[in-house]
Image 1 (cartoon, rainbow, N blue to C red):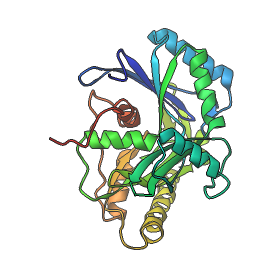
Image 2 (image 1 turned 120 degrees about the horizontal axis):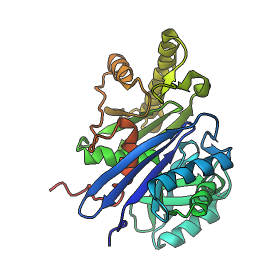
Image 3 (image 1 turned 135 degrees about the vertical axis):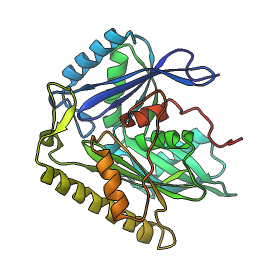
Image 4 (image 1 turned 60 degrees about the vertical axis):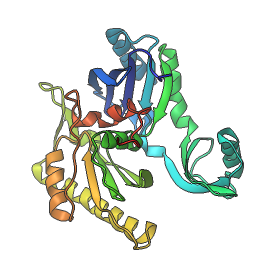
Length: 322
C-alpha cells in the first residue's frame, strides 16, 4: 500500500525560511507545487522555535492559502542536533526490542550529548550473535515542538527525516552514484554548512557548522523578495575561503582519523540554498582534485529543493537498477 494516497506536503524549516513541496504519488512522484516564505525577523534560531506565535500564524496562513487542512506532512528535521554512530545490538532482537535495548545502554556503553533521544537505526551488517547498526539519535525536546505545531494546525505529521538522507535519495534518483565511492555531500546554505560522507550507500561521517552572523550578512531584498549578501565582495571571498578550509580539514579528518589512511573522498556533490553556488563549484574545483557534481532536479525545481524532492522519494527503491 503506498504511503500517500492523495497530495502530500513536504516541509523544511530553516532559520530564514519555510520551504514547501507538494506532490502526489501513484505510479511515480509528481510535484504539483513548491515555494518558500522568507522570515523578516528571528522566528527560528539554530533549529529552535523562538517565536512560536509568529511561526504558528505564518504556517496557518500558508495552510489556508494552499488548502492543506488535514493533509499528510513529511518534514526535514533541523540538522543541528542529529547524532549518528555505529553500535552493536544482540542479533535476536526485533526493531522495537532493539530500541529498548539501546535506551537501556544510554549513559552506559552508549553515550549521547543530550537526554531523552528519539532513536532509529539501520542494520549495516548481520552477525550470529550481534548486528552492527548505524544509530541515529535526535533530542526529543527539539523535535516535539514541530509535531505539536502541525497537530495544532490540523496537519498530519507522518514522516520526519534528515536532510542528508533525503538528499542522497535525490542523488540516487539522478543516477550519479559510482561503485565504492566515498561521496562527500556538501550542503552549503545561507545559514550553515552540512558535510556528510556516504560510502556503500551508508552515511559514515557527518558534521554541521552554523555560520555566525548570517542574519546580518543576508537581508531580504524588498524588490526581489530574495535574500542578498549585504557585505562587500571581499568579505564574501573571505567567508568562502573560511568554509573551504573547514571542508579541507573535514576531508583530512575523514581520511586519516575515520578511515585510518586507507580511503579518502573520491567524489563530491554540492547542493544548498546559497545563492553563489557557481562560485563554490569553481573554488572547489581549483582547490581539490575533484570535479563537484550538481543535481539537475525534475519539475524545474531549484537546487534548494533537493532535500524536499528526496523526501518525497522516501518509499522508492533504488537498489534495483534493471
